[in-house]
Image 1 (cartoon, rainbow, N blue to C red):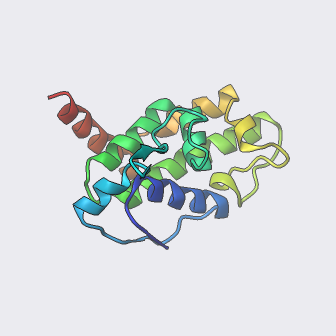
Image 2: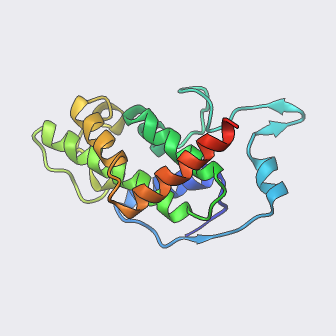
Length: 173
């Protein structure tokens, strides 16, 4: 799978990974800084038309994984965005980090619902018969997402949180 290293590309790859229940082999397509900068916002004819960084419900084209990640753990969503903003070549780690969080939340929601999570579907933790938006509101799913988001011994988590921390510090200078 090839993606363009935009934030939309990151969440698109995460959507694909979660939809299939497996992580794809990623081959990033690098664009110049000017191309990336111009693609950050949807501007047509000088009119701003939204972005994945809009508030909930403001962007009709926002990915399911972005919405779920924000619903489950705002801190994890922020870490993904800040790690992406760091411009470090860590896109595969960012995608694995998000996938681990969504998978942990889906599995916790399945246990809470007394069901077995199916192997395919959102993060491999799809709760049969329950839409992801519903299980994302379960306290058990949110707790599992927060635990997975802060699992610093995991190499993907460590890389993403470190990049997010550096970006946060840079933005406050």
